[in-house]
Length: 317
Image (cartoon, rainbow, N blue to C red; front, side, top):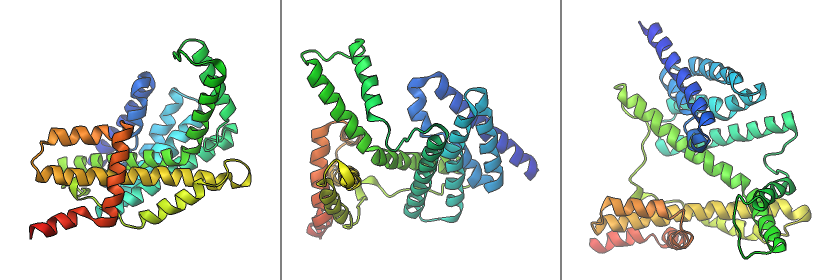
């Protein structure tokens, strides 16, 4: 009975992995959001049935990708998503504290992304961590010149300069984007696997405290100072790596400050009886509206230093 149950779960998770990938391939608009849940079937199977069944499922599903794409992409899929899910599910079996589990899952997901970037470089010579800026700029310019994008009122030289600056900045932020993607992927994967386990009657194994109580340690301030100093290094020459580290540390700390600011805002909005819908809208808009994100980042930084929520609780006593 138990063995047949394992077989059923293996078939369901393997089929789900293949179908999710096929859906992302057939509907490019869904590809990016679906990438965030590609590791879920492997993670869920790994948590429920152990390392070996989930690893075999990931290998089988990745091998099936050959039906759609060249073999090297099958290997990349396995490392980036299948292996990531297997490791995350295994970690969930061993780490009970949700905060520690999330951190370990993010590190595992990021390591798999870096390993897949190395495989791409070994197979094709393309360095995903430092792609050819000239080629990217050329591709964007060709789209602009073909009328795919309208940049009225901007002469060709200025347009080229603006695009070059944007491309350079995007390349600088590749490490931060990989960390951000890995964090979101690990968070979604853990929530989905925990919910699936709960639906099976086992109870959820992953949960986070209410968003209004989130706080980050003051050590982040050290990262902010280091990022500021490194970002002031020259953008070219032998100090380029320090400049890139600084830019990425600044982007990472800004994101954490925004989260801290939003958490603080939700705390005070809850106390004032603001509806959940309004809080949800604010959380959704902060990453998209630059000025709102900046305001949240400033208040988040101040909250890390002064702990306004602790002071507010103290005033009530």
